Amino acid sequence: MTFPSTCGACAVRCETRMFVTKIPYFQEVIVMASTCDACGYRNSELKAGGAIPAKGKKVTLVVKNVEDLSRDVIKSDTASVKIPEIDLELAGGTLGGLVTTVEGLVTKISESLERVHGFTFGDSLDEVRRSRWLDFRARLIKLLNIEEPWTLILDDALTNSFIAPATDNIKDDHQLTFDEYERSWEQNEELGLNDMDTSSADAAYASTDAS
View (tube, rainbow, N blue to C red):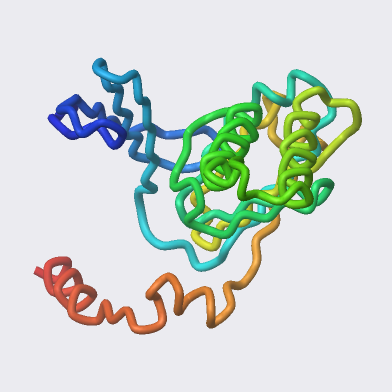
């Protein structure tokens, strides 16, 4: 399906393409992609289909070689991103939803942080803060050189994030692990699940089934 929309960068009218697909070892998802012919801005979003899962899920990948950088990554807008080796942690909602690769995710993080800190690169920025930011950016870029293994963790309370396996059978990919966990009350509260009342809808479905 294609429908008109507005570019998020220059506000010119553009088109958004939407389609539903089933991802192996994952779930059915809705992918929306926009491209602006005027400024070149590109954006992709992913929305999960189906019911809200009972548990959250943490996806962990040990990146060891260049091939790992090409793995497909689905990061939903509820997922946090962690790279322990450089003390990086981005809260859920940061960067929004993305359909990219491991390399693309690291690049997106670098570009996003640079936009946040870039305005301070003038004379008013003291040398200590400038040096710290440049050092951290260099560490981010260094990840892509695979000088040593590093860890990418997507922690998604709604299990809507995924990293593709490098093997035909996901169980044979020993660099990739999936760990389910019980969501905390605070996580459910943040997601608006504690006060969600579906009794009316459940009764309506039950009535329809009965008839």
